[in-house]
Amino acid sequence: MQLYPLFADLTDRSVLVVGGGDVADRKVAMLLRAGARVTVGAPMLGPELREKLQHGRITYRPGAYQSEWLDNVWLVIAATRSRPLNARIAADGHAQQRLVNVVDDPSLSSFQVPALIDRSPLLVAISTGGVAPVLARRLRERIESLLDPTIGSLLQLAQRYRARIRQRYADLAARRRFYDWLHDGPVNALIRAADPVRAERQLRAALSSAIEPTSKGSVVLVGAGPGDPGLLTLRALRALNEADVILHDELIGPQILDLARRDALQIAVGKRGGGTHTPQETIHALLLQHVQAGHRVIRLKGGDPFVFGRGGEELAFLRKHGIAYEVVPGITAAAACAAYSGVPLTHRDHAQSVRFVTAHCQQSLDTLDWRDLARERQTLAIYMGVSQLDELTRQLLAHGCAPNTAFALIENGSLPNQRTLTGALHDLPALAKRHAIRAPAIVILGEVATLADASHWYGELIGNPPHHPAIPRNLADAA
Ligand code: SAH
Image 1 (cartoon, helix red, strand yellow):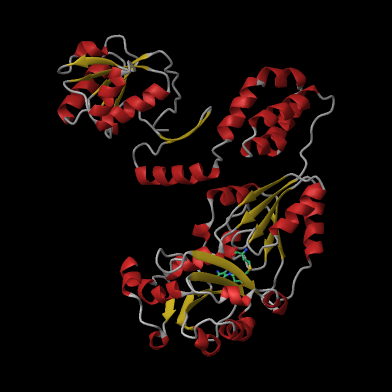
Image 2: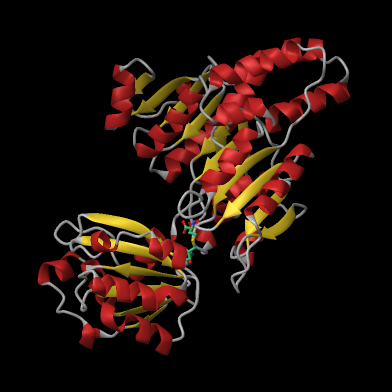
């Protein structure tokens, strides 16, 4: 081991930072967070350090460095621009047996400052001994994304009740089970749901109850976005990491499922490629079964769970059975496909509103207000079954939609095999047939769709500009 890992308690201990610039300021800020008494020595202070001085948060030693500055300090950080000066400070410090860090110079330092993930009281520190700072940074990003920001609040709560938990659960194994419950159960769920008061009440109730609390199962309804794993939210990623059971839509790709815990049970439900469905009742029954077994269940859906996802029905079911749940939004297909084809869904001059419409089957087509949909100056994002294109186009034209209204039809949006087909509405069914467009695909209809030809940046573009009305100048410029 090249370095001995060490977490130092610097509360009210004197430390010295030499240097008055930005780098010194960053070091000072960190030391102040740890409660250290900081003295800064430098001929001049930059604006941030001057402000800290004015607020009485630091002590200042003006002028050129002198070795007496090292008297009575626990550690010293050299953050001057001059390497010889940094070396002199380091040599003086080593001679006086101070812990010394020279910024960005491990060879002169006797301690190094690690990459840090701060969820106080939890701290995760990463060191590569100065060998691989890039790796340290990447690891830090990964761990940051895995630890919910609220974990610190849970730990602070647990800290306040530590003695009482110890008293109530003298037996170590029982205490461990209690802490597991604290992390996996309702207390943490309430903290994540921004309700610390009820979280504490739950904790107290559990401590004063005669029976040991057991983890009941819970459900997180998670939107997985349109397909690109990069479009998962951090919260969705954390849920994937925590789940025991994943009930996922058939369309969720392997790249996303690969991010789940290796030992999680994965069950495909919902729509199959061919269009057969797992009945909603079967999904409900599976949810219930696994929750009652005490599992943490994710219901993973494409896009956003509340946009044509029957998420509302699933929540109603969970509520009815008194099952705890959270909902994590996802990027809906309309937003993702618009972004990945360069089409802004709204535009100051050309579309004041955007409407998400479903046209999956005859039944959904029958209930649409076609006259309203055929209006100008709006964008339609039509979630649809590809087989409905004929009927969709016929109805829109019949209710007054201009035949040359621009469309962009995006297939497999955000995935490597994305294709964007553009053209005019009257040609839509024929073009889709000619290019064998398959589900999943979405139509973006309206003047903004003309922009795809110019602004498209991802996957293949199959443009049909001859059918387009001329792109209005200001619209093209805005892109
Ligand atoms: N809850 C989902 C929508 C479910 S309905 C969401 O918010 O996106 C399914 C429809 O969404 C598909 O028929 C298709 O019209 C659209 N869709 C989903 N993923 C898509 C993708 N990657 N590319 C294009 N359309 C997509």
